[in-house]
Length: 124
Image (cartoon, rainbow, N blue to C red; front, side, top):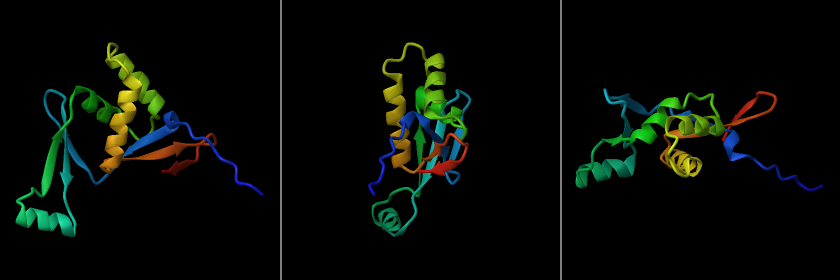
């Protein structure tokens, strides 16, 4: 017997915010994400190289909007449509959205859940 390869559509993934990540929204609507640096090597870097225990990252208008509409229920396709409505003149909005979400995932700010047709959700 051979294994069947199942093609997964990236647009069907559902971004889920990491509940351990703290963030705040300022009066202009800009999101600031706070990343806590923990672990052995980070402690060494903090002590000897004067690295901060917490880094604050200000997202731009697009990033703040996308972060704000991630609700752990909408798939990437739905997010891209909302982004197109908010910023109609943005070029390559889908590729920019996917790249932004990949960066968030690489920094452990989000994970993906996979939408199934029978409404079972599997975390990726």
